[in-house]
Length: 131
Ligand SMILES: Nc1nc2c([nH]c(=O)n2[C@H]2C[C@H](O)[C@@H](COP(=O)(O)OP(=O)(O)OP(=O)(O)O)O2)c(=O)[nH]1
Image (cartoon, rainbow, N blue to C red):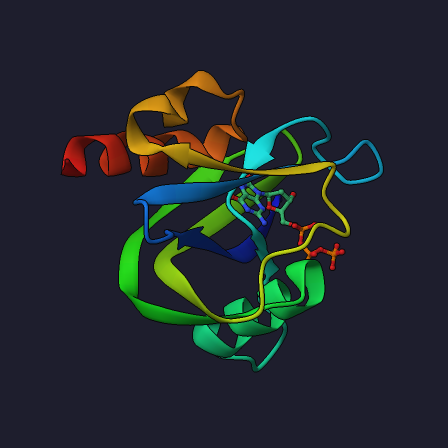
């Protein structure tokens, strides 16, 4: 049976209404795919704590999150992902790349132009529809 992995992701929006997109590096699982920064929720960790921790670890900044934007399950070849996405804003520091190959800010209308992790596609569609 495939393992189910709970992953939290941040839709970080700046004052220009652009959204932060991160390119998974060649050293990561699922390389060369664009994603919303975040990662796996650890055992006994709540989703908000997990997201704030992941963003601090990955981009050395502090975010503030609001309610869940969207939550859905996607089946990959080797595992099932339960992806929980939150809207967020940076409240301390500036996102800096460490694990990712690239960080870019994109307007909503341009979000669909990137090659996305497949589980993220419904999130992107919902974001585009929002405006
Ligand atoms: N962070 C993130 N991961 C995503 C997204 N969409 C998607 O399919 N994934 C997948 C890629 C990975 O297989 C998994 C998240 O793992 P990760 O490698 O980013 O998380 P992590 O830092 O906690 O991982 P690890 O080093 O502890 O293994 O979820 C997304 O939008 N953001």
